[in-house]
Length: 349
Image 1 (cartoon, rainbow, N blue to C red):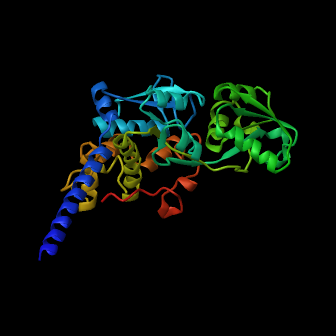
Image 2: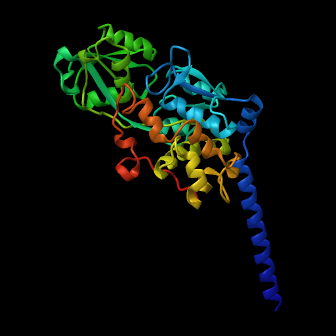
Image 3: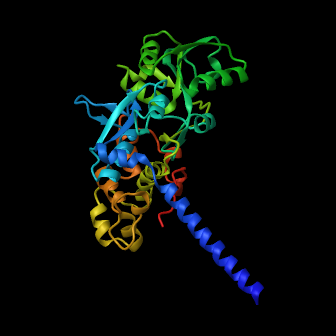
């Protein structure tokens, strides 16, 4: 009898300790300084590219636009209920990670490739892949080149401080191709060098090459983007280590944009869906019983605010880089999983 009582007491104590431990872990995992800082400041500061059409570029009035800019606006909509409460810090490839590490920016949204070294050695975390890309080459059409393997002995422009330098060296060494790298300190000067005739070819992410040819030249037809893809370039927002709440917020802002596309919720129909949609849609939009914002430290209508003010992922893709933009990129890997792509929202439940 005494043994049974002792055993029962031990179980109760262990259970209580377990509940206390889980509660403590839950509190630690959700607590972080970034959200409080943003609320006190009144806006989110996003690090973006100095200018890549379709991703982050200011228009003639100085208004930033692009896929990465929409992500920043989505964060502002989720945190403040106002997508306009976002500011942008243009950064070169060499500046970007230092700016995040130092606290100059809250989140890095600068078409940055996720690699094991960046994820494990910089004190940073990537949140969710928001664009799947690959490295390629652009050449002048009059060179009549159809593959990078024909670039033996060529001069190739490449931006300093990018994954493209190492990928270029590894690929050409593996294929026993000689080349002369022209390493340029920033992207804009690289474009000037290539389109000015200093290099035979230029290498970068394929989406950025398409943007450069479309916006940096008077005659885009004078250039050819080669069909080769020599690397995987999964692009994602980055945040600092040590603030799990902020990591979750940035991640689920993007997931909400993908989930909205999966559910067929758009800027045009979000109000109707909030009123007459099923229970799962109402929970997702924060207008029914339950909701998902409180666990992130946000209003339950955070997803509604994102979709209403910014749109779903497909809408953002189409107007910035897809069929509604000058780039007219195919969805490809960036399509929904239901259509053969890799975009797959973590379940909202």
